[in-house]
Length: 274
Ligand SMILES: [Zn+2]
Ligand SMILES: [Zn+2]
Image (cartoon, rainbow, N blue to C red; front, top):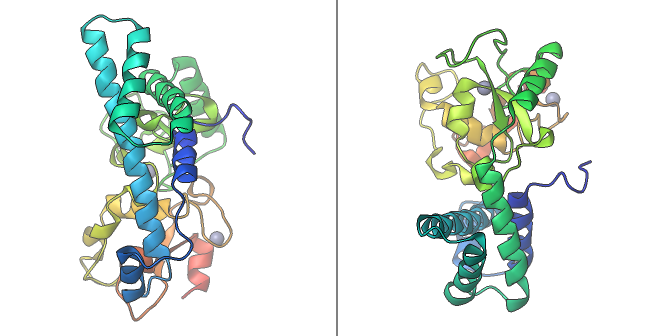
């Protein structure tokens, strides 16, 4: 359970956006009709909703950053940025009046988080604890090389990663940090969750035993798929950081390898599914 102050401002802003604009329980929108058409049982609709909320979140944080840079250029005080952001929200967006001040405060906290890097003592501490517990990359489950000096080009060298991206209002505090391999850290970029990746690109033509499957199933795709279960086995909830690389399998064996047809399991449960 998280402590009260262990919540990323970006996450709080995302929650607020969901409250202001909740998904419709029943509707006959084009998205619902397409969801029905491809027999997604509401999963596609949810994905598009999540992805759109993330889009609005990204727009708000980036636009605020844009305005802040303009104020900084003109060497204006923080006060003028606050006024400018409030004006922007009132005049260029249509949020309910009663939510504007909280949105503004949260955006400002997101920008503060974006500008704050992890302090080097904390970074060392996190690496040390992870090494002592023999933690794997929390994203792909690879065994990590803890003793390499950075910077280097070794794909499984250790990096301290923000679970909720710093650029999207993630704090540089211990609760939001994990060890990841260099390869995953780069590819995860500032994606928030599975819906933030290019899930629509994941439509493979090869099958698991085909020679080109591992090439077609790119690391970005795997990250998007593992993100569906927050990098845990969907059955036992064991995280990749403890159990190693998570396996992918198809829900419907008559259907191809596409985002909505792929499930995520630990090694043990993946064998049970075969
Ligand atoms: Zn990794
Ligand atoms: Zn499992």
